[in-house]
Length: 391
Image 1 (cartoon, rainbow, N blue to C red):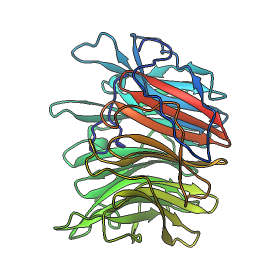
Image 2 (cartoon, rainbow, N blue to C red; image 1 turned 90 degrees about the vertical axis):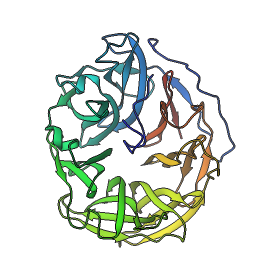
Image 3 (cartoon, helix red, strand yellow; image 1 turned 30 degrees about the horizontal axis):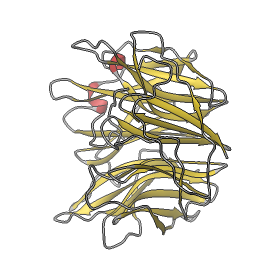
Image 4 (tube, one colour; image 1 turned 120 degrees about the vertical axis):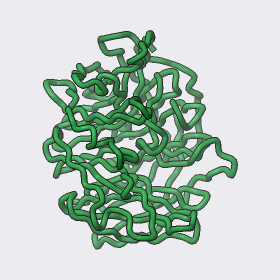
């Protein structure tokens, strides 16, 4: 996707080997959490040869799913990548899954996100193209042990009012995709995982007069969808954190979230047994926010640092919750980091088996977790790799 918030994870080129070493840099740091990482193999799916690109993972039912693509060794003028997916019962041994793509852009997509509702997986991907080179978004539905692309009208994700399509979230009611249109924050929702409906220019979700907003992530709190992001008043550069809530993904209410006098921006949110935890930017550091069962947000700890001279924009790349606590990956604009928290308040940096040398373009670091298992995905633009640890 483009760096204009296709989940901050653009299409990245990834080798015709089962495990691609690439140029991932070995990394380590001290932490109270020190996972014993084990490298896993991702076989190259059947089809035109290329290098593996891995982007996102989720545990669904009794198995892990990972998604990404294969960047072709011999691209043509019209195709240089194809979608790919893998499944594992233990996070260590992975099998390549069939991906059936019948649409023009589905055959060329790299899958950037995957989410689970019940025991069903839906993935979302894109490939840039067309007259203006914009991302062409396609969703994929779990079918017969693999993924099938779903046809959709061009204006559903693109069109004259398009801005960006972001991450996908799964929960009891179904799936929610977070993104933005010219009118401001927007969402796409589905109860069956096949047909998505867009909500754009909706009161309570779209921009209000004098405020420009950006939606960046979502979660289900047990009663309502919660979208997080930030907004800036006209004529200012500072951003203040915002929350939008809806019981049905159709009617929305906007809520302010406590911030500082500086730049505050919620980027990822996840549900825990104690409420919601959100991470984002807070001044020149990352910040955590906690929401209790009554719906009130409190600013929690700051962590990490953002150099004044960063090579790219800082962002929270992923945030997940499991029986082993909360896990997150961040980019400070120069380097990726992995973080862990027991309660969402205090965060500690975690040792990495390797890390991409850059944090934009073709470079990815994402984390997924389930019970006491943690799966780490890394891509340096030359190859995608997966590790598993138990805490």
